[in-house]
Image (cartoon, helix red, strand yellow):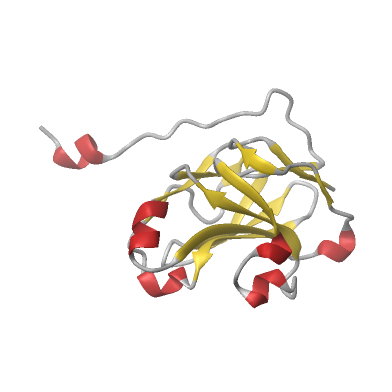
Length: 167
């Protein structure tokens, strides 16, 4: 028996009913929050860019757009995407979770990988993040917001791949 393969999980992609190229999708099940409501001032002030946040209930982070994984962080808590239409997106799981040094994060997608909205990017454990004393809120930041006008489409309880923002 190959123990390595026994524990390696295959995470299927999710797909919206109609894939729209001008929509940011919700990357994980949870509660939608306007960005200015997160507890980290760097994100809440939108100094890094505009976007939204999710207080997660699910354990899989899905691609909110189609494009490419532009960058990954060694600690697994964040990654950057470049959408097919030029948006530069930072997805940051948790506040100060870089201090966990990768514990509770299992990257699925690799830098340079082509992705479609709904492809799994990362496994994470919001309960373990909370138990370690950190806030697991997911921030989805458009780092070049001057290029687009973002309109919120979601509120309250959301499922992964619900429409979050139109651009």
